[in-house]
Structure formats: C-alpha cells, structure tokens
Length: 443
Image 1 (cartoon, one colour):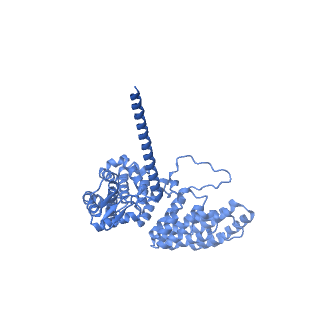
Image 2 (image 1 turned 180 degrees about the horizontal axis):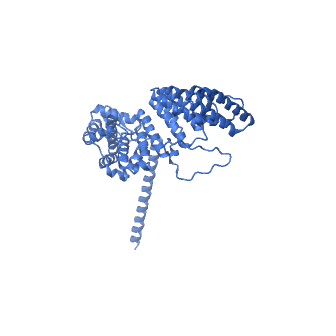
Image 3 (image 1 turned 90 degrees about the vertical axis):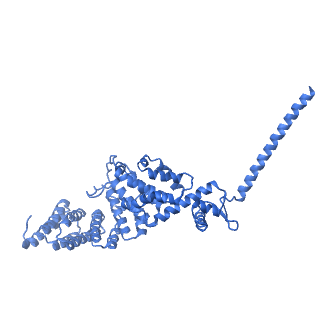
C-alpha cells in the first residue's frame, strides 16, 4: 500500500480502527495483519519517529493480543538494518526492547535485540556498557531458544567480560555451559516434540555450528586460564580443540595445536593429572610429525636428570617461534616456569635414586648454587610434591618418608612374625636331622 506523506496519518487512523474492531472481536489473524500493515506504512514513508510511536501505542492497547505483539516486534526487527543512521537504529532497538521487556512470549526477540545493541556499543568502544547489557538476559532459562543460539549468546557474554577483564564474572558465566553439551551427536535424528511441549525455534543463519561453538568456547577458556597461568587447564582446553574432527583432518591446523599441548603440558606442575596426560600424549601417533616435541616429552617421562642449559639451547628457537603461531606466545613467565619445571623434575629423579644426599651434591646435580637448590627443594616440600627433611648442621637431605607410630609398630610385628617363622623352621630341621641320625644309630 503506497501512501503519500500527507495521507500517512489518515491511513494509519483508518488501519487503527480496523485493528480495534479485530482486537475486540478476538480475530488473531486480522489483528496481526492490521498492526503489521501500520508498521509497513511507516517504514515505506521512512517516518521512523511515527514507527516508534506506533509500536509503543499498539503494544499498550487494552486487551492487545500476544500474537499481535509478537508479529509486530518480529516485523519491526526486519527494519533495523534498513535504518538510515546509527542514532535511528539505536532508537528503534530501544523502543522494541522496552515493548518486549517482561513479556515471556517475545523473550527470544528481546535477547536478539540486546545482542544487536551490545554489538553497537562495542563498536563505539563502550565495552563495559555492552557487557552490562548482555548480562541482563539469562538465556539459559529460555525453553523455546535453540541450543546453539543459547550457547552462542552465553559465549558472547563471556567474551565481553574477558574484554573488560572481569574474570570472576567470566568464570561464573562460563559455568552455565557444560563441556559435555559439545559431545552430543548432532547427526542423530531430532525427536518430534510431544503435544504440550515448547516448540524450539530454528537458530538464525549467523549462529555457528555446535563444533564451531566448541572451538570458540575453549579459546575463551584459554584466555581465562591464561590470566591465572593455569597451564594444565590451558593444555586440557587445547586438547579438546585438538579432538575436533575438522581440526584433526587438517595438518596445518592440528600441528600448531599439538605443539601448544606439548608446551603447556611441560609447563604444568607435576601432579597425577599432568602425569596421566603426559603418558597419553606420548601414545599419540601424530607426535611423529614433530619429533623434537616427542623427544622432549620422552625426556620428562624418563627418570633421568635433564641438563637445563643443553635443553634450552636445543629448544629456544622452537619456544620463541610459538608467538608467531596459533594462540600466540606462551606468556611472559613461561621461560622461568619452564626452568622451574625442569628443576622440579630433576629433584624428583634424585629423590627416586637417593634416600640421603648432601646439599652440595644435590646442587651439583641440579646445576644450581646451594642456596637455590635449597629454595627449590623447600618449595616442593611445602607444595607436598615430595617428602624431604634437611639436616642443617650436617647439610644432608633425607628423602625417606617419616613413619607414624602405627606403621612402626606394624613393621615390628611383621619382623617378629618373620623371626618366629624362621625359628620354627630351624627347629623343624634340627628335629628332622636328629630323627634321621637316631634311626641310623639303631641300625
């Protein structure tokens, strides 16, 4: 319907009368058509002010039908990209946002509107405002929203929190997504919704696939753990990315990821989880493509002392090349932490082969001064990575585990049992020999 500017108000009034009749008659289809026609008239006339006014007025009509409000919001959302300037676009989004606020039947549309507004704020450099806007919406409670759209929305919330360096809130939001959700086989046929169930809407075309969302999720978690220098968790995130089929099929993608897994696995402090991951990675056949890293992991598994200077000379170039590869550099403290891990490995090796050793000899094996060796040993004892005691006057380190009274008593009981068993066997042998000799004398 084409209307000249002068006749716009008259045409709107005419349609408003039609809308009123349809609304009071309870005619859903007629009311929806009337409200969408009103908006279409305003749009074609490019009268954005009237469009905003009509959206607010129509939504406030007495007994307005839910279906009509939904149709009106969905229709107006199509005009957002057609707005002539940014100010008009923001005004239209805010109008639609205020109309849909508190209405559960347009909650998905409201979430999409807030996402658009947050993107505009971010482009203007207002990261904090964009993050606050996104956090107003709890999409995890929306039953009709598609799973991929929910995940994408929460990931956007996490990203904005990380951009504003709000790491606490980023962690809270990231926990709304369970990593197991990415492992569900999407190829399985979708179940048909039963009668009475909420019909799940199809996600918009710009929402990534589940596997792509998995990669985005773990990349954001890497950013979060990188802030805390939690190397083991970073390694686990890269391992999850490495297991995505699209990454595994392309050597140019999985080689940089596998390199990162190896580096962060080495940088992680020694514990059962790290040890388990280290052994499982050595079984990966793809490591043969990067033999230097296979050798490095093998050195850490082998209980032999590693010379730090020779190791650093061999791997310094590889270490510095990481900044030019996927994920960027390993961090400012990474070189120091790598040296720390090698020292810890060497101390564990020494504790395996020695029950007692002098501090001077320990320092020689570690290629450190006595003071540095003592410092690193003390840190490992405090973190409960190993058990050791230092005899300061004698300068001797004892790696034996201190036994409690029950263990000592048990060891004594075992020793006594062995002794009595030995005495009994000896008596039996003596008695046997005596009997044999008595028999021989009788003959």
